Length: 578
Ligand SMILES: Nc1ncnc2c1ncn2[C@@H]1O[C@H](COP(=O)(O)OP(=O)(O)OP(=O)(O)O)[C@@H](O)[C@H]1O
Image 1 (cartoon, helix red, strand yellow):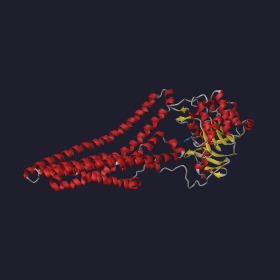
Image 2: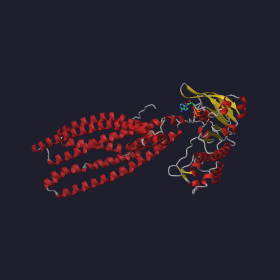
Image 3: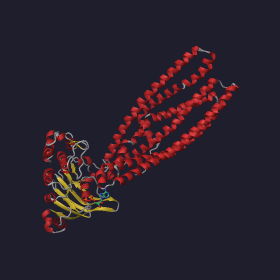
Image 4: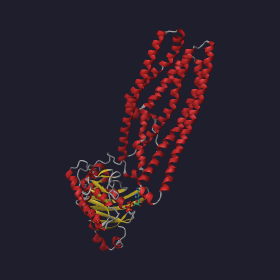
């Protein structure tokens, strides 16, 4: 994936500007809040110089009332800031997550072959959280901090130019160090997101493949891989911590110098009579008011940096090309009969490594076409092309005479159904799993599908029938039962074109018979591409393509191919893997 940085300008344009009203309200609130924060230090000068020295009770009342009011204003603005900005930021995060997920789902299958799903989960869920710091309190605090620092500076200069300059030099040095540090930290944060995603991705795979890991006694190996991953994460955090630690310690040192100067010069000026005690106290409190946001800014700065890094990655993803190009794919298929033709189709996953060479064949509507051949010969690739998951490098695939590369993918896929080897069932009830391609199907249709796939044969034995929970928290189903649910799902979807990857696992004869019967029901009247592993399926196919090394080695019906005594005959007679 190409590295691409979103400039702050870009983040401003796409995230902050559309929410300008809310950000403006936030800025207004922070300005009010900060203005109120100056009341206490100013009041403290009057308290010492006027109220205490001149014993002015009347003024004391005004001072106390003023300070109370200021504190009340600060409390209210702080509540509103969090309430308005943080809620808005969280809303934006959920909106962005939905957008990113939509984008991810629109990417071609090839993308998913090359990207860990754990990494994608982190892209969708974590990376967009940076918005919280842009729209939320981060940016506003930064602006608030700047306002406070500038106003304090003016007030400080008003009290004593000399003292201010002396305290200011260390602060300038600190700011320069902080800016340099951010430059170092930003790429570290960027990298952290990547490492996090990789480690999470591997962990998800480890947990998903626990049977294989335990089966091969490979826990140690996985532990090792994970330890390396968390160590990379640790090294990354360590690097950023070193920089932050350096920043913190230099801030302590430089601020110490500033404080010492204030003590020295302040004490001297009071003795000399050029500074009142009240002014001295005001100066000290104001200095604190100015320094606090500067120190805080280093924190906010790194938050903003992290936010921008996360958004960089989101932007990268959002710029990827979706599989369906609506401008090129202009043909809409409202209804189809299901005639498919491959004309001189070649395909390669990687450049210069062609895996299918000049494939041509015709499938009539409703025909079952069996793809057989040794492992790696290209059967799944042909099925992938027929399902529009892949696009040919050269040659043309047509559906009902229309060039598939010009057909709108959604309009084609509404006529498509897939039943794959390791079919995907998710947490939920059996009913939900069958209904998922057609959530609005009537109960009648659902029951028909359930019957056709012989799902009722086992659900009738469950107390909750079709509403039985499956998955982690539910009942565990056998391979054959899972397959039948997948078949029922396809029957309900009622596609015109069906891609069927027959399971290789052998089932007991009874299950096998039920699956065969339900498959016969499913393929009736549908153009079916079946990656066939069972003799019974192949025998019944209208057409068999024997694929070898990405080419069609033989083509015909079972009887024709047996009579020809060629490759198929050999596969068949030697009971090789077909
Ligand atoms: N995502 C991919 N990226 C790169 N090469 C791939 C990819 N998928 C498959 N291939 C290669 O393409 C060739 C054909 O693979 P394909 O999966 O179509 O074979 P198959 O006949 O279905 O095999 P099997 O019966 O083992 O599933 C193989 O050489 C394989 O290594």
